[in-house]
Amino acid sequence: MSAPLSVFQISGRAMSAQLVRLNTVASNLANAGTVATTKEGAYRALKPVFTQVSDTPGVSTVKVDQVVQSNTEPTKRYDPNNPLADKDGNVWDAGVDGAAELVDMIETQRQYQNNVQVMQTAKTLTLDTLRLGQ
Image (cartoon, rainbow, N blue to C red; front, side, top):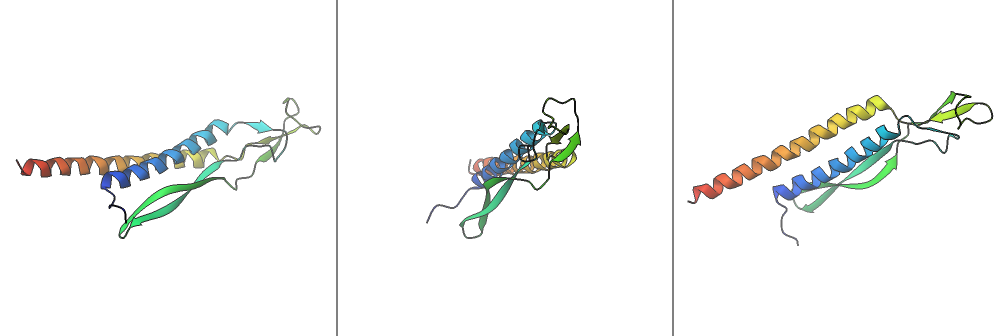
C-alpha cells in the first residue's frame, strides 16, 4: 500500500490534466482556419478524456486517459481559387467550433487557477502550523 497523497500531489495532478486540456485547446484554435482537399484530411478538434484515479481510500485524483478527435464534422465550402480545391472547386474547413474552444479555454483556466489556490492555501496552513510549534 502506498503512502497517502498530499494535497500538493492531488492539486498537481489536476493541474497537469488541465495543462493537457489547454494544449489541446491551443492546437484546436491554431488549426481552426485550416482547409484540406478531402473530408478525411481535414483537421478535427482534439479532446482529452479524463479518468478518475483512486490511489487510496477516500482520495481521488485525475489523469488524462487519452486524447481523441471530436465529433465536429469538417464542412465543405466552395472556393475554386484555393490551391487545395478539388476538381469541383470545394475545400474542407477544419472541424473546430471556435466559440466552444474559447469557452473550454476559459473553463480550463479557471480549473487550473482553482488548483493553484488550493496549493497556496495548503502552503499557508502548513506554514501557520509550523509557526505554532515555535
